Amino acid sequence: MLSAEWTASQGWLSPRITPYQNLSLDPATCVFHYGFECFEGLKAYKDSKGAVRLFRPDKNMARLNKSAARIALPQFDGASLIDLISKFVALEERFIPSAKGYSLYLRPTLIGTQRSLGVGPPGSALLYVIACPVGPYYPTGFKAISLEATSSVIRAWPGGVGDKKLGANYAPCIVPQMQAATRGFHQNLWLFPELDENGQMQEYVSEVGTMNVFAGVVNKTTGKKELLTAPLDGTILEGVTRDSVLGLARERLVPEGWEVVERKFTMTEVAEAGEEGRLLEVFGAGTAAVVSPVRKISWKNKLVDCGLKESEEAGPVAKRMKDWIEGIQYGDEDHPWRSVQNGYFASDILLPDTDFIISFKVAG
Image (cartoon, rainbow, N blue to C red):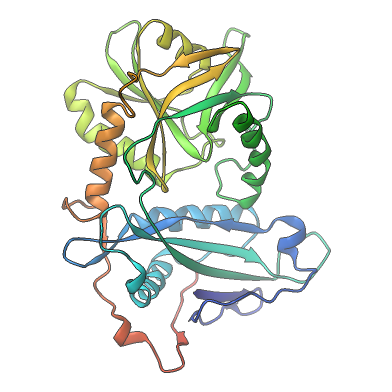
């Protein structure tokens, strides 16, 4: 594991790469009582030539710094942490399977470690990165999921922290997910009730489970195909996969006649598009699955058909996005988003005591 301590008086101390081990924390440590914790999720991939790749790690570093700043945890230099992770991945390269679909999942985590029951900014913190090998999210091919639209429980709200990757955002979503599962649904489609410009209460689509959500629709007025997703208004997580889907859609779908639209849209719009045959497909987007196709959404005691035929498990946009993104991740396509970690080898940096100390710059 990779770890680095921080104190208010000394700043960042020397990071270390050590064998995986338990943390020793006082029962009064602030992370246990007041939720001083944020994290990231990214993967290391091995291409057909054996080179190890990261996918847009700069985006994860920027988001982790934003999350840290929001909860009074220290910020860091993103490029330096990417360099540290590269060294860490070089040491753990043997755990990265060569087959496509497999990868090494990386979990950077930052916690407040001050021993105090008083509420205030932590005077000490710990940044650490752990890893584990993971296989294909869909080992036998796509499996479309069903969702329960949920507005009785609110995942995020204006002025809150829904756009930050905090552990505190995830635990409250588990019970609604369990409840949806008892009714036969895989995940929640989080809705946000809000008055529209006409003073009518609407339920706006925000996210699906722990993923960003996209809908492919035919615009009722123009007849053009649109790829819709909610805007980054402070309630939506700035997903790296979300940003990648949008970037690739603008680059490759727009020339085919699609329009890419980031705007607030309601569940009523989705249901009407489904009833009128204008709903082409719906899918979630996130690091774990890349894309997760949706077959049906339960809303107001009816099932909204999301455009898939019974014989289909994914729509054409979801399929292409998965192929495009994985092609970049595994090096099949030469793209600016690829990040080849060729600069470090385990034989170069593994010291006899398996404890490696390197430099680390602070933010700025």
